[in-house]
Image 1 (cartoon, rainbow, N blue to C red):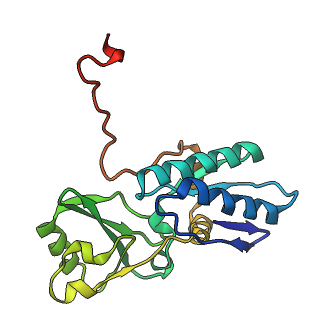
Image 2 (tube, one colour; image 1 turned 90 degrees about the vertical axis):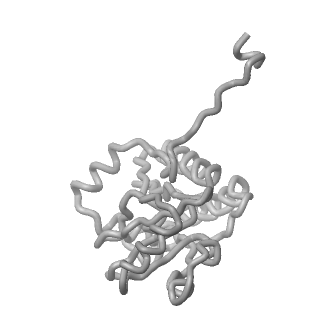
Length: 207
């Protein structure tokens, strides 16, 4: 969580939510709004993932609620932008474990925004990392889960997202890009399309 006022970051609070995102985020929100005092927000920026399914959705809902209370826009940026590596003015690429035998990569552009994720199997994943050359590789996951071999096993740095980097990215975006993001509805970044299970035969909804 971070709060930017009059050209400077006046509040930062990090927390490792794990499965308690729904409770821990409110403490950070309360502390940041206490720091804001009677001022009103001009904008709320939310990291839209990829990440925890419930955590990302809760973060978006909280951001929308705060924006509604302050009568300001709420915009979403991919959570990979909330990292030091996305802001180092050098080529970088986010990688991760998509589960079920799949992995993903997401290249970071010059201002720190992440490209849409590319899903692939383990063999293709290793080839992509080898061909990346000197590009900085980073992840939110445990790199050991990638089961990389040789020098690749030491090539991926693990990081945690930090909200103040989202503000940095926003400031570097062009006015046209900012306007486009403001017009977009907030939605999570999914590694796969959401899947809705069909009700089983005999379920009360089918009667």
